[in-house]
Length: 181
Image 1 (cartoon, rainbow, N blue to C red):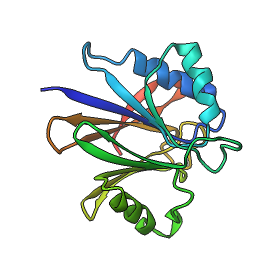
Image 2 (cartoon, rainbow, N blue to C red):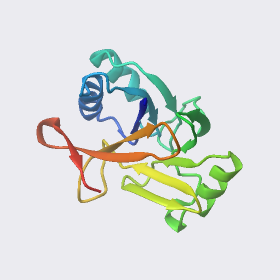
Image 3 (cartoon, rainbow, N blue to C red):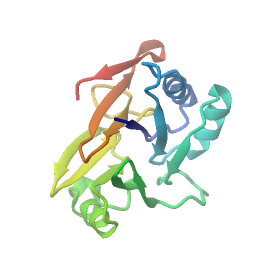
């Protein structure tokens, strides 16, 4: 059985050191033959990606959207794509009234026939299933607003419809540690 994994990052806000730590960790992800096949960046730091990728040598099939602080970006602010038997809707979240609930985000996911919606903007990790749609926010790697600090997520998509979401923290010295969120 093949396990496909998707790296999910958001809100680096110029913290290239943290982004490099995550990309180096991802590039060397263990165990052997258990790699991350694709990556999603949910905005607010798009210009950081190329810099960090060039330094670390981590290149991937990136799915990217722009955020409210990606000034002058020509990248769209929402995107739907298929990956590992799932339909993903991704956005930064600033256009979906997140602080008033997830109603607009759920509606956008439904319109795009998505079963998983990835979003950033709040800088707080989140995972919940609502009306059959999995809502996942990886948190922020650059400016966290949660007490657990800087975070990102890895979504494991084994064959079939189930997924496993793991959150990771970026600790002192940019050490990557798995979290219980």
